[in-house]
Amino acid sequence: MAEGENDPLTLFKNFYSTCLLIFSAICIHGLMLTNQTGLSKDGNSYGTIFLFWAAIIWLAMIEGGQASHVGLAPVSQELYKETHPVSYKIAEHCNKGANLDRYLLGRQFGVIFVVFCVNLSGGPIGTATLWNMPEWVIQVFFKTGFSMILFTCMVGQLNTQVNASICMLDFINNYFSLFTYWGCIFVEFTGFVHFSYAISMIVHNLAGQQMEQKEPAKEGFDLLFFWTRVLFSFGILSFSLIITIAALFEGKTTMWDSVPKVISVILFFGLMSVVGMLEGMQIAFFGVAKLTEEERGNNKWALSTCDILYNRRNGLNLPGFMIGRQLTVVTCFFVVARVTTQNVGDDEKNVMGISDGLQGFLNLGFQGALITTILASISWQLVAGAFPVAFLSTPVTYVLLRICLFLEGTGICNGAWVLAAIHKSIAGFQRDEVYIGTAEERRSRGMKDNSKREIDMPALSGFSGVNLPGFSNAPKSLRDLAESDPAVKEYMNEVAKDMGKDSSSGGDVLAPPASHGSADDSEVEA
Image 1 (cartoon, rainbow, N blue to C red):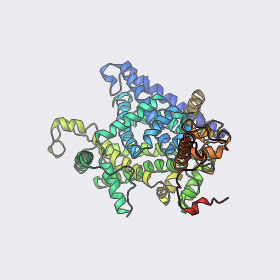
Image 2: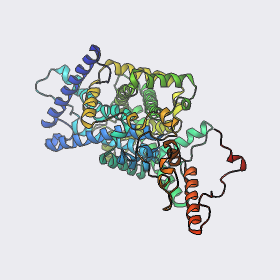
Image 3: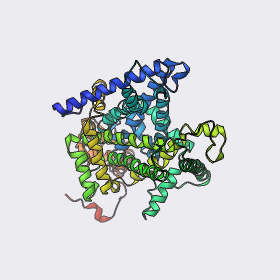
Image 4: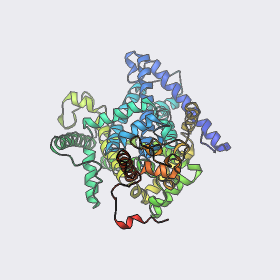
């Protein structure tokens, strides 16, 4: 349950939501054991349950890992090199160049794949019934997919997002997280959703802003390989859009019959825009979480949003937003899935006259997943990652935040807080501030921690085998400065080298190296 919120209303929400979760879990497993889900209908119940839980656990790591990787990006990984070695190993690669963007790209496509496995394993077939349950229960929990939505949201997504949003270091400090990270990097390498990069470039150009060059410009084969994947991704996306819109106007989707075709198209793009905003908001919120108040700017919408997220409810509005956001996104996905999933019977003409084999594949709805992944998710995340503060500086962000917090306030997914509390207690997670302090504290000490450890610097005992008089008792602030500032470290190394040379030649051991600045630099302001 949420820390510090143990009032009767919150406890009631936790209770009824947890009861709904338990009931949903029982129903899903009952359907799998009675061979009434998409995968178990062929008779392999236990194999289906194994795949279901493997997908749920992996989804939970992917969802929580995103919060950690994005939130820790502004923080020097040297701060937790000793306390969290696996987190450090991941950050060492993730924080180089554009690797964070690559991870986000692969991660989103990975989520789509894993969610497909979850739905294939646990999603009920159309004629599913269970234990003589009333028809209204079957309609609410089975036909609408409500039980799958609750279980997937609370177990596979929200509970890990809650913990990872405030315990980023502890959450990814394991080799399962390391494996998941590299898996996402590989998925990005395949290029299926590379057109997202082109969209990000277009957005930057329209805004009159240059994209931040996180890596040297691609040349030769690297450049050719990149644009080949972009064109490949564009081709798949274009076909998916054309075939989906054609199916909408031909009335061959699972959209409700009472909705006009034109409204279906408008609804499709409108809901994708809402999903895109929510996807970008989570990236922006995690990215801004570790910034100081000065770095967050002075826009009134950005300041109001940050105040709600980080200063109220003991900081629990950030994970609370994740719960409301997930509910909103899942609801939008439910409608988008009905809009994009094609429904062509054996005796009907295929959409645009395509082959039966291709039509059967499109009836599964993969084209909708691809469209949503690129146009309603990754592209928005890349833009939000590039301009996190600007993304917060709009009234749309503020309004959507309020809506998400309202949905979270209903308590329908409060079971995620219960699961998160249990997981946190078992795993021994602690808030990041325990290890690395707040952003203001890190800034006040030059981005270095205030622990009692001795930093691994030769300046403490000597360079090149030569002890520097007095440095073993130097103030910690000076030692932190030597560790944090490469120029200071280089200067001290040069001092040590010159001392070594002078010692061997009998010269002045305290002679400094060549000056690093002008004569004015010799005056140090007190």
